[in-house]
Image (cartoon, rainbow, N blue to C red; front, side, top):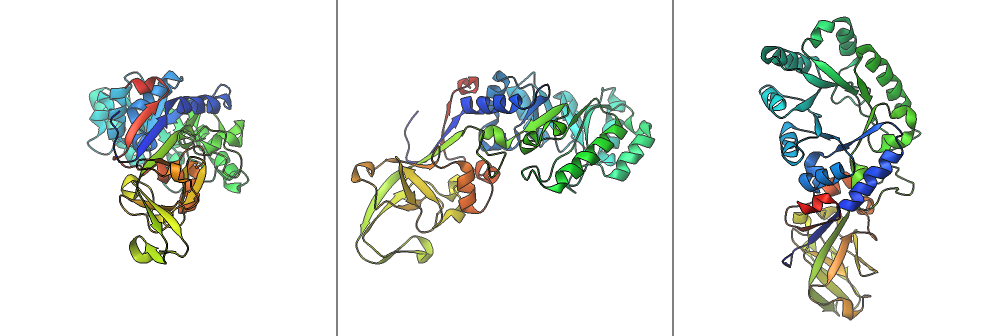
Length: 369
């Protein structure tokens, strides 16, 4: 791998596989599907999917048909489900690439039924039930109509009834039980072959939420599915930037755009090649932390597009050479912690990773890609 001055992103596919197996161990006979939308949460769809297949995953969920077609190229034998379902004009791609649409409305169901009737396709599909998110899915009245009018399912073979928990990361939230009850009732009315409710955090709510299939996304990639408790998942990514320059400051002076930080003591300021152009959030200005070896150093001044400045006053000079790696995410600085400092969630940190990283995959069959 050719060295560059830009930041490096190391993705541990072995950790992704270990996380898959950890989650599966909580599920007894329930199948665990992998959610790999948004380029596998920013980590690379092809390598991640191949590693998950090696770990035993057979079913994948993505958001759009374009993501599904890309995944089909990487995994020719996978069962691929598409959360958004087909828009008008997309049905042919679903049939051509053997994709299973999630149908989110009676209109989408009608369109899929008509198309499959016209071409004589088997029409395999999932049906999504809105149990409280007020986002995608059939409402109670739609479910009742579908139950009363089975002709609406002409040429459609239902695989899964699915729904999505709004507060699964809050185990004591009353909405979890409310959605569970609503899902059981609606899925029973529709009568699909299988049921799927739990995503990453939902797996840890208990067996009553597991049904036939659980769908894990964020936890596979190292985010904590049980906020407030120890993270049972292995960290997957490491982000390193390199020192470009170290400045010694012996007078009061500002650092970075907007003069938002003032050096008021003799200090050493390191400028590192990473910024919001790489997905390192601007919200971490004067708030984030990084590590040089085991030394924690604060972000001072504003994060800019390409550069971030750190106060390295207490770091030994032997660790401040040109090109010295600085850990912005890793074992000492997990993604959830970074997200907390930035006032966001780990999902956003992962999916915001830019294209400028020098990427390195370690572990797993996907590394051979």
